[in-house]
Length: 153
Length: 125
Image (cartoon, rainbow over all chains, first blue to last red; front, side):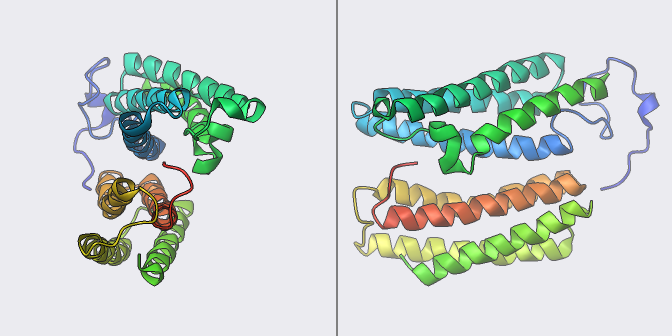
């Protein structure tokens, strides 16, 4: 990809984030990897919960409802990361914190009282069925979002 | 399901993931050779999709009531690499390579799930 002709200094402070190709936002660099992974988890969790809720909600209502909530949280973070900007960064920060809390709570819950979850969710056993990515992602996300605040100013 | 092909796709995807992860570690973007590698693996997944469709339309079904799940995995598999390839075109840095590695890893995991679901599936997911 060609280097942009205008240096960063040409972009006025507070200009929209779409301005210069050189401007590094939430979705660039490591953010690109995060967006991709969150996108994968959004699609995965959403299709899983759609299938489960539509075919056999009665079997494990709690587990399937939780899958749907997880899908929503993932979708919010994905969109926020792609949009960028301070507002989106704050929303993503909140969602990542909620996600981390969710993984920890549900992970502990499934270990303490497995009978509450006849079927697995994305967050069961701290996301063991998903290579523990559900646990790794929010931590990485929080770190990235903290770091980007310094970069974006 | 054709197990040898599933294994072949999984191994090829893992190799691609390792290759791109190596590029990411060295701080390099994905190059033409990597895209060729992606194309090869993508071709394998398309063959897999074709065989899967033929088998399903020929009346073969996964053990257990999981045809919908199986079909959605079958369709999801060939989508992995084109998506990460697009992302890596827009991110000419080590993070583009890391993204392709992640996509190939997801593909390998999907192969595992595909095999699971065909054999009756442990749980839906």
